[in-house]
Image (cartoon, rainbow, N blue to C red; front, side, top):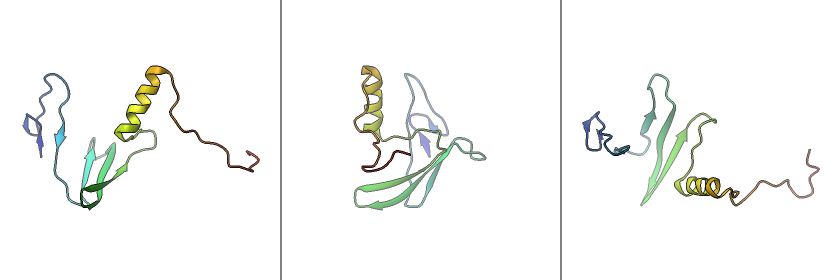
Amino acid sequence: MDWANGGPGKLKRAGGPSMLVITRREGEEVIIGNPASPLGIVRVASIKGDRVRLAFEFPREVDVHRREVADQIVAGEQTKQTIIGQIRPAEGGTGA
């Protein structure tokens, strides 16, 4: 495993964060944070053709978003708009 531009286990941060690029097979995992008490785990759930399914195991208080959803959230915060789609009560329900 190599940190981009820095060699094994090293990371150069000149000009901003670098990206760690690794290779994993189906069923293999990446541990995020301290291995003794990880913040989360990313697992390669399956690979079918050009599609890769990832499984994320993080505490509920950690937000995990696809890039397109994260971009919508940021754009909504910048323009003070709400994200498209809201949870509505079921039709015919009493609402609790």
